[in-house]
Image (tube, rainbow, N blue to C red; front, side):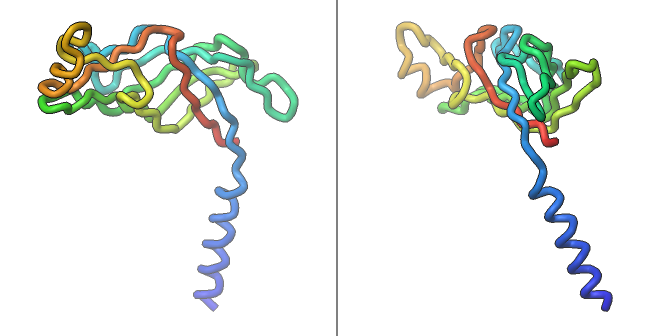
Length: 152
């Protein structure tokens, strides 16, 4: 009987997470994000803003241009032999239209796949600099968009 109860509990808990609805929120940086000169450290707050109005149940839930604050969880500085820089954000904070605080736990990694990266001598010796030194991250405001997902 105990095994049956345990299996029943596991099934019920797993179906609740499967049925969770993910609400996409498109954001863009509201400030320069850069790893040059050790500008970003763990615990720093990076400002983003919402790109489009977000609706939930056909009602406005989050307004366009709402400020989103991302908290830096990890920073990997660039190294030698093409070891590229990387910034990891795992928690985001914003307010909905009713001024309620929303916390989003979603991992967003800024690296050379989704951010502008520059290496040593990127203007004249782009490929030679890439071989000897990994790229730094440099993202200008409102040039790139990222997706967050809020579970409802």
